Image (tube, helix red, strand yellow):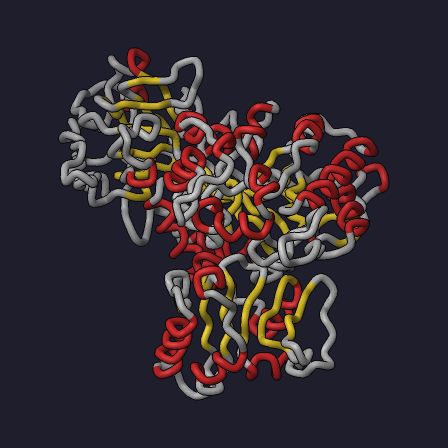
Length: 597
């Protein structure tokens, strides 16, 4: 086994290789109490037995939550060639190249994030950080400091501002003063809007009252009809057109930054929710950035790539193939391997709750019915075309009206072109009426809500929908009660992406102000753990390979200082990740497992 932090492990081959025999190992990083479970010195096996009969790694004296109903708990686990060989008595008498005494530490399957934006997050790590700024004056001060360090005319790019914290959106005039007339582009934490300075508005030809809103977008205006600098939904593409496409090498660097963070949080598999062209895409050749990061050994997690529907185009295959639309070469969901592969086709229906652009059947408080990215008819046609071409489809639908459109589209697609056990997805499913729950279950769909939204954005979402609709927000228990499986996800960087924080929100459903949103939607800690492990794997049609520590599955696991199912009154989010292993190789925890370099 090879372990490193920073550069990460060696670039994995297409087939998972057996880890190299490591030297001695120990763990001793202090936990919140100042004491940490210690993994004792490993015992290198010096037997002259045939090496092929040996385990690569044996972990003993651990509390192992397998998330396997047939064998939920164990104390020892053996790994060979990147997979779990067995547990407890299955491996007790087997020699191992390295045996690690875990000293009572807790081991769980590697965490999955079913919906995140890895490239976006990685890029934000090198931009002006605005998530913690709580006043407009503070935001202007941050922009001014950044401007003082840049040459004349250089762009100032910031990310993560929240108008709910600031009390209002910044406007072009404040950014003009703070930035000294430079182009300033500040991205809202939702990803569904941004605010720019006058210099940017001039470059995109949107600085006067005469400019028209683009299809699927809104240019926010003052009382005189003059743009304020706030651009919502597809209006943002006027700005992104000035800077995109980003170079593949730059994106690969961003992915490396993100990947190191993910590994430190126990993530072993993530789904990138939209690459290529479109609202979130960075370049039409974005998959190449993931390949480059992988080739460099910098992609520390398994990655599944959603392809934005904007990349679909007519194909000239044989009529019998049923692939009249898709991406080049007819590639579709499932192409790739255990490390990097294509996932669903991503289709955006509506906007966001905190941006008041989610498509709802009744108006949001003080606002309208929301915004569709394109007409519902066009969206339904896209869903059917992608389904027919063999894709799983992930439909971004936050408002209940958008959920209706998704239900109609998926039902039409399956009726016209039946496919068994497809597991199409409703991304976010932020506002779901009671009457929609059985329809989602009947259609066999996968709802993908983001539990940490409740803490990070919950107060603003509750204000947007009003008290009567708060019970419909980002459900979980109701989905389970209707027989659905709910994967854990974050939508990072919209909300913090650490899986343990997400689990905490599933259990508590508390907002940052301390309010509890729809307490009846709480789930147990065990169900929260399942959401980020086996249910996240199931949502990707991958439960046969990962998601539980079951013999034959990939040896993706996380070593924790406490048990997330039994937190003894302490929040799940305070648990420390001590080490993360992907395919039996350590991708995080060199300071804890410092014999595995």
